[in-house]
Amino acid sequence: GIQVEQSPPDLILQEGANSTLRCNFSDSVNNLQWFHQNPWGQLINLFYIPSGTKQNGRLSATTVATERYSLLYISSSQTTDSGVYFCACTDKLIFGTGTRLQVFP
Amino acid sequence: ETGVTQSPTHLIKTRGQQVTLRCSSQSGHNTVSWYQQALGQGPQFIFQYYREEENGRGNFPPRFSGLQFPNYSSELNVNALELDDSALYLCASTSTGGNEQFFGPGTRLTVL
Image 1 (cartoon, rainbow over the protein chains, first blue to last red):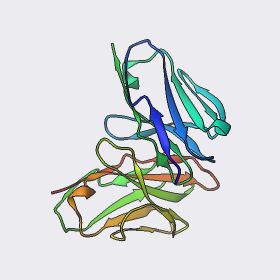
Image 2 (cartoon, one colour):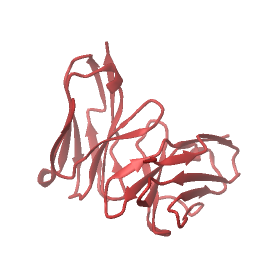
Image 3 (cartoon, each protein chain N blue to C red):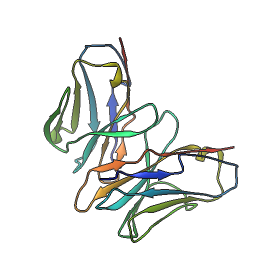
């Protein structure tokens, strides 16, 4: 089956810094989503992005389907950005291992 | 528009017991998927229901079973609970003809 890998596993930032999270997948996909999981476990939809580039405020994402990777950019990070970020692929979502982000004031 | 809801929020059971978790899909969504998330890991796909029929299953034993009702709400049943079944159980719904999944807040199950 398809393999999904995320990097880095952990990221520690000071407030205001920018970051890039990466998601590699082993086969072509027709669905790719980015999520933020808050401390209470809720998965919050960030982007549905099987290909192309999207932006939403301080967050943006790019998926290059032909090269089987997606990037999530977080600019001017805030403490509320802390949590675990997951990418997931296919219609029966296969999740990566996540990136744990901690933003300190 | 009401989002995906799940009940109960928390549940404590003992080994060998049976449990039923419930999920109400978002309005207009006819597909429901269930996931298990163990501590420190990403969610794992259990199964998906589309129009009351199972539409795909992950690597989970038959004691994990489900139902979808005509109003598209769904249940996850787990029999003969084991300690390793302790996890956060997440339900997600997908709109008709769509691919994007939206998640509920989850049910945290503890098996003692």
